Each structure stands twice: as structure tokens, then as C-alpha cells.
Length: 402
Ligand code: TTP
Ligand code: MG
Ligand code: MG
Image 1 (cartoon, helix red, strand yellow):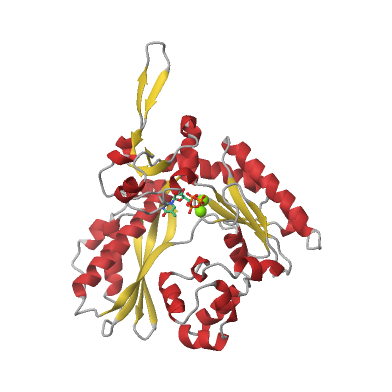
Image 2: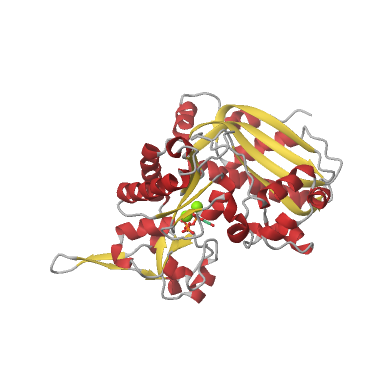
């Protein structure tokens, strides 16, 4: 790993909402919330003089159980943020404009902005629909003037994204590693560009809440709070041996290193995922027999979420994996390979259920995970299935042996 890297994290501003504003520029400056269904689009009428009139729906008229995917900064001023229930959002901002979610369109703009960035900075790690990491060291060099070059490159990247998308803005963090860049890209959102070096860590990183570090989830954050660690600075000053004792060696050391802004992870240019998985740690450890029903429900929901991820990202997979962690932290995994790729929740559940029969179920479980690997694009999978090979249903309709 070369020392003195220049790593960028680039994240689009209010991404879904900003894409919507490109097609409805008249909504600029208004509170807009994206998260409705198909029938929440504007009503369009052609007036007598031939002009088009659009009537948008207001959040106050929303009824249902949907959640906000994102909101413009004007709507965020009312406290409306991603993942908030739409009915709650409507109570906060009844006059906000409501728009349906159009993933196709967001994916299209995602491809556009990434292609534009890749022209300038080919070492690109795709981190989802609206964000990427870049290793810019090849362009900036490692000398002391590298941060000036980094800033110039950052401006070029932002301009390229704006041009390629017809006006979308993004925010960029430029630092020596991924951990710091991810935190830094938020500093000056929207349309931000922030350079941060190791010397800036005490002043700019340490005041942030510990949970802002990617990898400190709500549970770890609560456990840290309980021992008086609220900020990243608190964490940095805490005795590392005590962290190891409380959180285990690998996580304890990672917490300590992260709080000091140390992160050696390379920027990985892998555009296609190897597998898609979901896992969940239970509120309390569950017993395979006593909590059978509860576990069954969680298991099925995990499979549904993996199926959703596959659908959204356009994949199917031939290997179904199960991961299980016992209350003593031992972890076991089992795989099943299918003759054809699958992507639906039922087929995944069936194959994962077969895996479950091959693990000992004699003690409490703290974590359950489901993975789909050996991925191929969904359209290839459909072509394979249509080619007349046996379907997974044929295979699983046999009574399972054992
Ligand atoms: P984010 O980058 O987290 O948010 P954002 O781009 O909307 O806003 P910001 O300016 O703060 O970066 O997420 C990118 C997109 O992913 C977002 O536009 C909508 C979608 N999303 C959800 O669907 N649900 C969620 O809970 C979150 C956080 C995002
Ligand atoms: Mg974003
Ligand atoms: Mg993002």
C-alpha cells in the first residue's frame, strides 16, 4: 500500500430528488419528496393555447405505508429525511410536492455520472447508486503539492458530473483514505469540495459523533455511549486495551484505528458484485426450537430482502449460502448450488432451508445471514431458464432426504 495516497469520495446531492428536478425544473427551490408510487405523478393537461400544464400532488394527500427515499434540501428543512414514513413526513411538510420513485431513471443518471468520472479518474470503486471512491494518487503524485492538485481535480470532477448529467451537483471529500473521505464529503454538502489531511483530524473529525464512522452501527454506538464514548475524539482517547476487551480483538483494534483516521483499504475497481447478501443480528439470542416461529419469519424476510436486492440490481444467482452465528460467536456457513440461477424469494428460501438442515441447531443463535453467489445478469438467467433446463421447482418438489 503506497503511503501518501489521495482518495476521493464523491456522493451525489439529494440524488433521486435532483434527477426529478431535471425533468420538472419548475419545482426548483420547493420542498419535494420522492417516495410515492406510480399514481403519484403529476396530472398533465394541454391548454387551449397548446401549452402543457402540470398539476403536482401534495404530500398532505398521501395515504399509505411508504417511506421517503429522499427529499430536496428545502424539504429537509422541515425535518423530512430518507427512510421517514410518508405519513409522518406529510405531518411535517404537508405542502411539499410528492413524486413517484423512478429507479430506471436514477440508474440511468447513475451510469452517466460514473462514466464521466471514469474518464478523468479510472481507479473507481462503485459504492452504490450515487457514490464512488476514487484513487487519484496516479494523477496527483505523492509530493507536498498533491493537495492543491487534488482540489483542482475535484473541481474538474464536479464540472464533468454536471456536464454529463445536464446539471446535477455532487459533493467531494479528498483525504488520504476512504474512511476520512467518506466523512469529509458530507462537510460542505450540497455542492461541496473539502480537502482534509491527517493534521485536520483533531479539529474536524474528532468532534463528530462516533456513529458517523461507517461500520459503527446503532448497537455498537449504544454500547460505546454506555461507557461514555459519544464522539470520535472520545473513542480516539479511550484505552485501546479496554476496547479490545469489550468488543473483541479485531473490532476493538479497528475502532481505535478508525478514530485515529487510519484506514488502509484500497480502492477496489470491481464493478460487478460477486455475491449479494443480507444478514441480521437479533435483539436477543434466539433458540432454534423455543423461538422457531420467530426465526422462521426472520429467515423468510431475509430471503425476501436478498431477492429485492437482486431484482433492483438486476442479478440472479446459482449458489445460495447460509450463515449462522451461535451465542458463543462461532460462525458456520453452508452453501447449496442450483442447476439454474434464481432470484425469487421462494426459491432462495427453499435452498437456504436445505442449508439449514445441514447445521447443528443445539444452541442459541445471534446472527442469521443469506447470500446469493455465482451471479449472472437477470436477463441471462431468464434466457437460461427459457432454454428448457429443469426449473428449481422441479428439483425441490422432491421430498427432501433426511
Ligand atoms: P444518499 O446519498 O444517502 O442521500 P441523497 O443523495 O438523497 O442526499 P445527500 O445529498 O445527503 O447525499 O442516498 C442516495 C439515494 O439513495 C437517495 O437519493 C435515495 C436513495 N435512498 C433510499 O432510497 N433510502 C434511504 O434510506 C437512503 C439513505 C437513500
Ligand atoms: Mg447522495
Ligand atoms: Mg450516497
